Figure 1 (tube, rainbow, N blue to C red):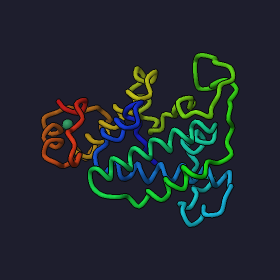
Figure 2: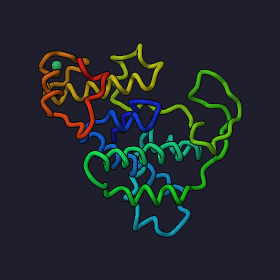
Figure 3: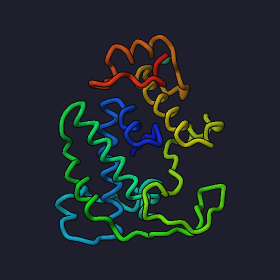
Length: 209
Ligand SMILES: [Zn+2]
């Protein structure tokens, strides 16, 4: 499961993703939303609209994060919506649109408040989590080796995801797992030769050499 949070603005986050990553991230987010319902089933219609829930074994930081509070769920609904709008603008409607509609209209019974943001270094006490802007700290979900290679970035979740995303694109170009954020001329050529596509969009500025 790979969810790249490339900007705190959901619209920009969607814009930055190449076509393939956008498609797979839409499916992964739909899966995480459906998983929140697996643990909090509320209404019929879930089975016909949802993905099969991940088993207990496949639970990840994202499936746990989404159940922390309602704000997290609503935040991911918003990001999925923006990604679907982006996909429609670039290519076509996406089959996950019906999952989004169902997830948006059937918010599960998750906590409205959380005591202290346990992920935050600043204690903020009890906070209202009914509003998506009050989501808890986003999890960093990437292989351990990437977390180790960019320790200086760990204070910034967005920068960490940007570095990881770039490393994943580089990896596809060089076919080796060198873990470096490469900006060589071969990478530059690959970005510009449509090996990666941002259909109807410019290549994000921060990816250009
Ligand atoms: Zn390169």
